[in-house]
Length: 245
Length: 267
Image (tube, rainbow over all chains, first blue to last red; front, side, top):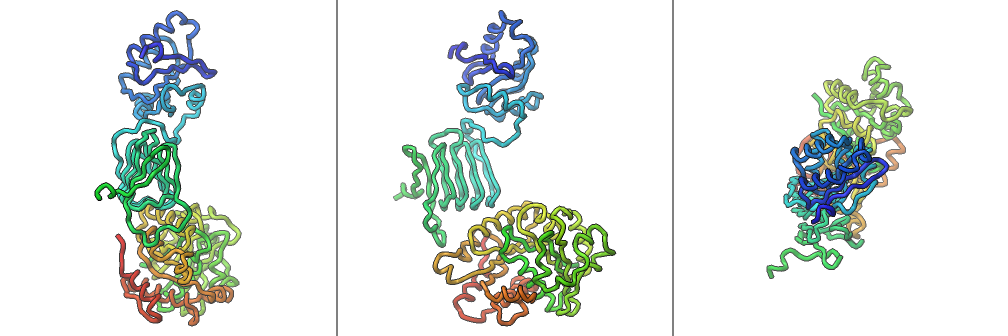
């Protein structure tokens, strides 16, 4: 990707947002920025700057580069916008404000900076390409309890009605699924939901929502392992053991 | 050293106060020294159900804020029992935050040296009133109806209790109607146990007699013609002798099934 396309500066009434596309290397990006600013130094002087990094993960060293960049150019580093929890943690541990941003650089705007003002600590579900790890939870989730994973989630227990699971990737429930599940939050289209008993109050994969028809639920709950997946924009549930026949 | 048992449910109107009155009376009847504590500040009902309301002088608020000498001054002795049943009423004109969980905990610590059982009536909800009522408790009995909202709320309550490391929990399914379960309009015992997964202490059937007893201020457990009263007698036996086999009395149908529920333990 051409650096000019990867890096852009947007002015908002709260300051400047510098967008750096996730695919771009940081060094050339910062060099390019230097170039951009060089001949307009007076114009930019003293500006408040936030870096929008999308889902890029950075380390301490890289954060220091941003800090130095700001110092050199006499900018105030307002903070970092990112949907990566790693990046936000690195920022915070270096006393730089961090705010959850949406997926990818394409979607940014002055709205992001106003979020910075409110020092967001809410548990907003970040849109993030799901990581390939699986969080394991070894208990039944009762009404009012929630669990979240950036990647997949394995529940060794039941998901009671009134309880909720959200995951960037798959959800595997070795028990009864009676609560609410939202899988594929990261936009992973082939996310699946597995359960030994599928009686969800609400099931979502990506953007598609499904719920059980309001007929009587199974009595004496016969365990019947199934997998729910997206097919042509619909959630389709198939018996897990079908293939073996 | 006495046991402190809180009777809670989450949902309102499922039968907590009735359970407190009946279990307390049952235990007192077999000679245990029992104090009932009404934790429902502002909406007290336990005194009414016990028929003791016109003898209230001091209440829980007065005790905790030292407006009377000690809890002994506030306790009302129930004359139907020989010095074995006492009631500490709640204030009617205060609000839930008039008392703090820590104060309740201290009061329970103090009172349990004198009594075999302290039974606390918990208000509906999960907020301050609930926190007060469970603060001093060693065990909890969860009351639910075989009905979706009640079970949902009971599940929430159990989650909150487990989070507080209160793991001595048992369940009473109240207002059970066999015909409705057969028709599929009411959750079955298995349905409820599947979700709540807590040891079952007893099943109390729907009983018109309960209304009559509330009006009279006479706990149903003292009424020989009340089926709910009979269920509570069994429950009291099981509290005194945990692990007791259920006594098969009447028609095989209902009680035979019920016996199985007590012997089957779901992990």
